[in-house]
Image (cartoon, rainbow, N blue to C red; front, side, top):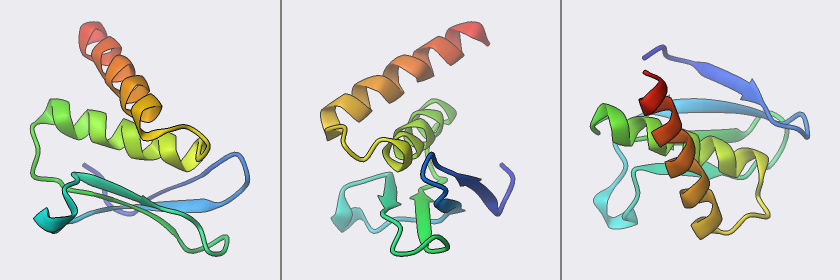
Length: 90
C-alpha cells in the first residue's frame, strides 16, 4: 500500500492516512480523528489485518471523514456493504 496518502473531504479538510499499529486497549483497527484545522485531520489504520478487513477498515474510516453525522452502526454497515461489492467485482 502506498504511503503518505492524502485526500480532502467535502468541507476541504485534508486528511492523511497513516498505517501504524493501534493499541489493543482502544479496541479498533482504524481511527478517524476530527480536523482541528485544515491540516490536522488524520486517519490511522492498523496494517496488520487480512486484505478483506483492511479494505473494510479503510472504507469505514474514510466514510467517517466525509459523514461525521452518521452513527457508528451506519458507517460500519456502509463500509461492509461497499467492501463486499468490491470483493465481488474482483
